[in-house]
Image (tube, rainbow, N blue to C red; front, side, top):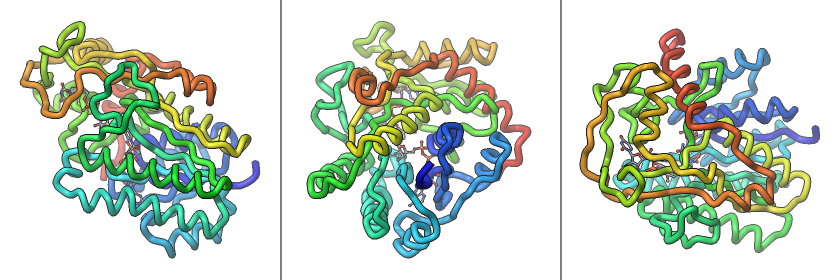
Length: 339
Ligand code: NAD
Ligand code: UFG
């Protein structure tokens, strides 16, 4: 296959699963990561899963010289750009830091790609760009209304990519707006590994299941949803990884960009998630209803037709698959060497 694929931020949760999907499809892949939110041992675990060494370069996407060296050493056909900070709460406390890392990182990376003549990039965007959408399931044409610096950094990044594509037809961008990624690889060797108490539902539920946290706090049971709790479009991280493969293949074969939602199109409530996780771990997980979390949307769900028509993307895995693989991952971690 002509040219290698660079995964910026490839040691993280979604990047590590995408690494496996790309290698399985025959791509030669390089991981570039500064490990600000991941651990170098991820590469050993990827090597164990694949039975083959992993090429990983430690570095920061804001470091032009490091990127120039990387592009000089390798023939890189395309980049998948995961490298970003993703905590909404931290972004509110440190908006400049988020702009520097997420927007500054993208601009520095694009400039290095331009110098190297590599003009294909898949970008990790988020459903967060829709804020509180008027329409659910939400189409890609919905207005941009991000409500925090993290979300706004994603909108700014998308705008940079759109302007660059308009200025020079040589660039091709796959902009992927993920809904709520969940689950883990069936090996139990890689998965979501939050450093602090998780803000997101699925990793929080996992911590309750393994007994690290006493009970789940359900934020709000008076939403206009079937059971009153918040509804989200949870997508298995392995389905998401396959979405990146399809996006890359489309960019490389057509030279045309695309902007699509990646979700299942199906909404699941907080209580649905607790039920599915309870079934996966074989115990009824304790929960308590609390007040709504400020800024939360009642329902988030993807319109999926465009990803299907442009990329042929459809999800294959269920909420039960997400919970079972998550449970396998969190129970396997006890046997691994942790940082
Ligand atoms: P993650 O934190 O697990 O992975 C991100 C990786 O990027 C980490 O390994 C981190 O060390 C690395 N990184 C961060 N800044 C870097 C820099 N300046 N230079 C080099 N490496 C850097 O997060 P994830 O869940 O895998 O998310 C990947 C991407 O998807 C992010 O852009 C995130 O904003 C986006 N996204 C995630 C979600 C989600 O819920 N997980 C939802 C929508 C969008
Ligand atoms: N929830 C709880 N208890 C918790 C955590 C969450 O009840 O301890 C509820 C929330 O109120 C919400 C649902 O579970 O109804 C999902 O919450 P998450 O925090 O897991 O996910 P969000 O959809 O709120 O947000 C996440 C990311 C955003 C991103 C969005 C869409 O944090 O940055 O997914 O990709 F924009």
